[in-house]
Every structure is written in C-alpha cells, then in structure tokens.
Length: 148
Figure 1 (cartoon, helix red, strand yellow):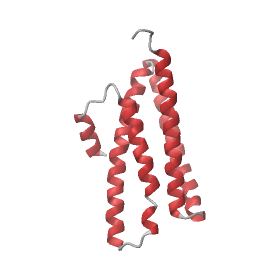
Figure 2 (cartoon, helix red, strand yellow):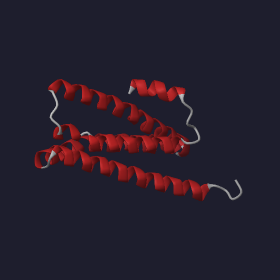
Figure 3 (cartoon, helix red, strand yellow):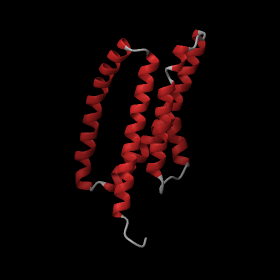
Figure 4 (tube, one colour):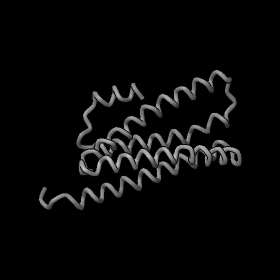
C-alpha cells in the first residue's frame, strides 16, 4: 500500500479520479476472481507462497488507487459541517462489515470450493463497483450546466 501511495502521488488524475478508482476496483475484482485458480493447479508450496505474495502486493496497490480518489472526492463534495458525521459513519460501517465478512466468507469457504468463492466474490465486487460508477456518472451529468 505504501508503494501504491508513492505511485499515486506522482500521477495526476484530478479530472478522472473516480474513473481511475472504479477501473482499479474492476481490476481488483478480476484478480480476486482469479485468486482461486492456484487451487485447481498443482504447484510446489514455494510457488503458492510467491504467487500469493505477488497477488497481495498488486491488490494493495489497487486498493490505494481506488480508496484515495474516492476519499478525496468525498472530501470535496460533502459539506465541511457534515464530513465528521459522514466519515465516522463510514468508519463504523467498515468496522462492522469486516468481521461480518470474515464470518460469511469463512462459512462459504467451508461449504464451497475455494475457486467458486473467489469467483463469486470478484463478481460481486465488479457488479457493485459498476453500479456505483453508473450512479455517480448520472449524478455528475445531472449537475453539469447546459453549455459547459
């Protein structure tokens, strides 16, 4: 994630920041979907370790490219007097959903093949990110004044 922050600080995405965020989230969902593939292929244990280290590095980079632009967008578009409430609610919901997700995915991994769970998780991330991108794009179009 630190490396992603360094890379992001060198790039300038001010005009297309949300598109970059949702594009990186789409790539993230693809990698999550493919994370179950190694279970279908017989590899040496060292290869699994190296593969999952590489996957985690790439996912960490992608999270920076999705989270940072969204946070900046929220800071720019939420009135200052509301930011404390909105960001504390965001943190609260995230804190609640993390252990809930661990429980749900623990049950899913017990009941289903690992590859199926990863495919399902990646598809859910992809659908949700596309849905949010469509909503944000429509709102931006609705607020753009006619003629510019």
